[in-house]
View (cartoon, rainbow, N blue to C red):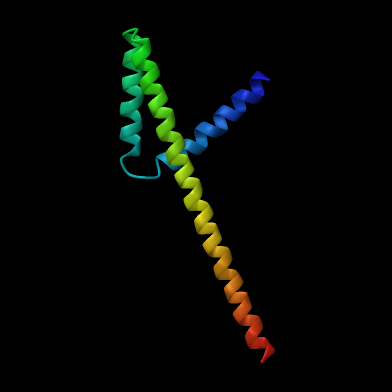
Length: 95
């Protein structure tokens, strides 16, 4: 079970990094967030660390959801274009 969860976490982290770092500025933003969380933990500020981590996770989830929806939208546009193209091709063949 630990191996399965570990593998799932690794996959999630890889996917998040790929999407998150694709846009300029996101790497620095992520590094800053992680530093703030780390410093809060190091200073034994548990409540602050929890708040920062919660905000970080929420931000990442929102960005991943947006990226997923954009991807689905782009895929839908491609499929619609291909269907329209096939429809016109078939209509021309019927003439």
